[in-house]
Length: 298
Ligand code: SF4
Ligand code: SF4
Image (cartoon, rainbow, N blue to C red; front, side, top):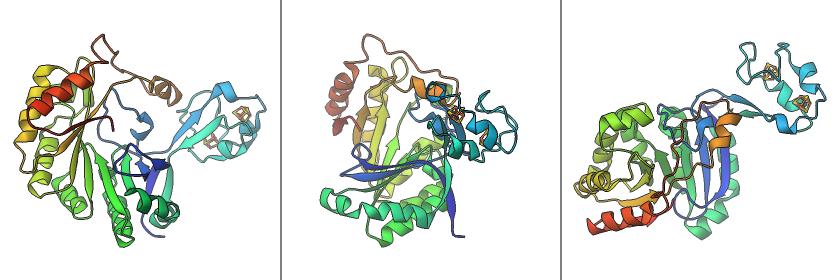
């Protein structure tokens, strides 16, 4: 078998994950735990069993199918569940789902190539997202090479929290990084993402020095990083880079709350405040005043 990896979704016709119409590949596993994450199903590198009780018609097919005799409706994390997926196959009501599956590079490319005409017409391509794509470097590098051979544009959506050697290898095969910048203060960064930011800022400086294609994505999180003082720090850092990147400001919303319940993951999403709606425009004006090109939205 060729190189394999774990994805939790493949989204065709994506229009917010880089230029043009794209296929976005969501890699499973991430070293960060951002409190506002939209894709908590990407946290764990392992597949995850999701149960939607509101769809259940109480047919008990899942009980019969389960080879482990796991109490199938009890919890998504029961210790005897080995994530075999038999109950998912058996369920007639789509009340059960395995988030995350192991796939080969060839399987992924077969799907990616189906939409090649859309990439060509729109200036799009493939975006590697997650989770954190750099957390599966061998799989990512193989897919980047395969897309490169097909002359498909490649964007990597990353937190930048990865060893320098991985960043360098990936940069050699990537047309555009969608690089998240969350907080300039390392302790604040650690408080809401679980990791300090030293490696991330260092990797960002490195990519700018190498002339990599870079778009900086800043999620505006109420009470965390959306204030004027922090935006001034962001502006000073970015205008000091060897290549000054475009900035995309991502407005805050908390729609993803339901997902946390679905995946049985504790939710610590910040609440919007009265300034949340106007902060993107204010922050954009501030950064533009410092000489940066700013876009609001993905
Ligand atoms: S995934 Fe497999 S082991 Fe887990 S509950 Fe379903 S059938 Fe049982
Ligand atoms: S198979 Fe699906 S619909 Fe039937 S009891 Fe199990 S979860 Fe409910």
